[in-house]
Image (cartoon, rainbow, N blue to C red; front, top):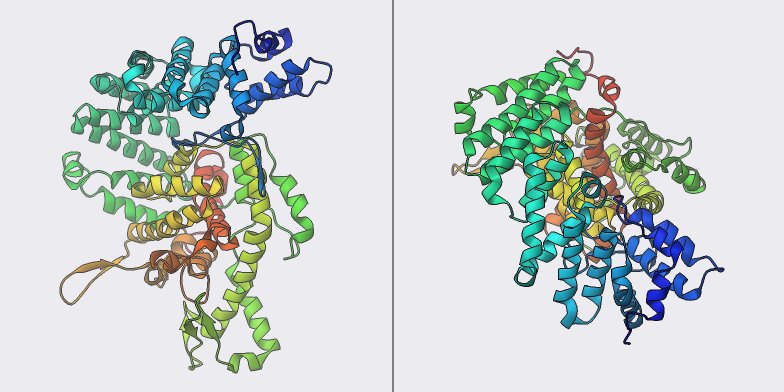
Length: 608
């Protein structure tokens, strides 16, 4: 399908209303979709104009797929087994139309995206040329605060393309690198400097300017406070390492620790625990030699003591949306309406707070009442079968047998109660709420990385694991999420037990030291002091023991099959982990009063 410069499609693309909708702006592509769609749906406008507007609206609404090279753009929305368009849905005729009008798109950010889409779906022989044009559009636009804030994904995609096509796009790559280096090393806009520095680092660019970037970021952090300073110093430390200056990197990291301790000193006990946990988490990334050089060799022990006094995990409380009845079927619509918000962070808070953590006391009471109503059932030996028919649990014969401190028959009843909860929430409510949330808000891997980094409960060694697990679940890949999050939660429990001064490993008779598994860790009653009875109940019921979902064991031993990708248990684990990680993040940033309202770690005692 050949089209000259005076083709009907170029005439259509030059329509005044369409050009107004395509006007250059720094708010990214998403907001351009609505006016373009309005033109496409206007029956009074020429059909060719409507067709071009519809194509461009579809591209505007594509959701970036993070670092997925082969499928960089996903659907804007999914509805069960249906979804909105993706680049692969475009026909040859569609690509030909787009190719004919690209240079008439005044928004350079949108033009860059259209060129990318045409490159990956059109004639393969033209792909290098289209990618060069895509990068040139970004070069011509330039790195600005507004563009990087609202359309950073186009620069991230552009850098990935430029690195792959370095041979033909070296001039464009060099110029984008120069602009990012300038922003990272001189900009007075701290957010722009940090974002530019991160983009450079992720693509291994700008190394010859590492010292200047590190010094600029460290100096900028001196004039700001709290979380923003912490993020800036973290990136500065990374650039000191790239500048082969590990000493300055260690000092910068230690400066974060000192800031957090100072904030803890100025806070009441329960809020202080949030800062102390984060301080210890970051301090543990420094080697013993570095801590000794910085005069902080005994600081981990001191921080662990203070954390124990003020409540180790600093989980806090968030507002939850509850109902009077356990059956939520008739109330799903009402609950979904409650979580809607234009602010993505607020939407996640409401989504995480759809239901409180499972109540151990309620489950216990339910199990006791069932036992009283059917006492004969307690005399019957119960078996639990695995999915392949193996007997993995038999109720003990002894009346004195206990599981996690509960009588065995009561614990079995509590698990039955819990399974009903997981089936109800994971199978009905959460999938619908997740679909609404993920359709309303486009979140990227960087958003979940920031969440994991800013949550005191997440081990510093597993921030990327948590971020990816939560991100995969948000994008609907619950199977991948379970495989990452189940072992990551074990690492989380191990860290906080260690922070509370508890041993998490054992030395065998032959002198080898081995880590205790999650089920063994959950036998330690200190976990209740750290996380609270309800969260501990969830961890034990969801991840440990053969009569529950037992996800940790199923994942670790490869026993879980393809059902993991769509099961309600997988959805529930993802939501539970999101709630667990998000609460300390929210409390630290937005809701210090909630952290102050926590119960003391040891009931009946005041924390210091």
